[in-house]
Image: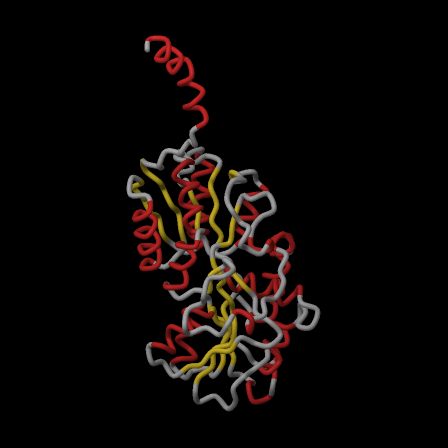
Length: 329
């Protein structure tokens, strides 16, 4: 008996080593900087905490430009605060990647995501598909089906769009048009030549079209579809040539004080549960196999314009200058 006990004692380390090791659940404080709208951000945090209740999430929320300005000031002071960034456009993430500010997360599962939606070095990851299409007032003289329809005489002076000088989504839109062989870098200039006007952001576009001040606008999908659902006299079209897409990327900073919780947050957003949350919140999920919200057509009917984020970033100043020349501002 003593001999058997001794043998078991000697074998115990080997037996324990053979058992699967479960990673400890993340805990502590996670600081999130995000440009998500307040209600969406609150829902995202609540869903994450339901999965990882030991993590307390501290949120700073503002527009992408304001978030990036705050972060730049913190870098300058040598005291960056956030563990995780979740912002509107990938150009800001790409700039941080090029500056060496982001931590790679090679363990994250991206097998269900198109390669175009995440950085090849796996420092940032698209979490949803926010497309820009055409919103129209129900009193418009025609229902547009194509981007070229906004150049028709019947649309002269009736188109409004957000400015890439203020809106990250508008910058992506301008970049996608410039990279498309059919639309080309002069598409927005041609819109201006047809009397189109610019406002600072997407909210101004929605107000102008829903209020009947303008008949057509370039707008992110979820805002237009939500307004229609709430009774606004508007419709929305995904143009046949394709639509620009903002991926609302998430990334972990190299200076993160709680990298374990940060990795858990990224993994949650990209998981089936996190992507189903995005769909419930009214967004097109980025992960394959997740059903879109009921107000959207099937993904097979939505063509995404290809976009190279690094190229947009490299030509950002030229895009903004061309826009200013065409529309003023």
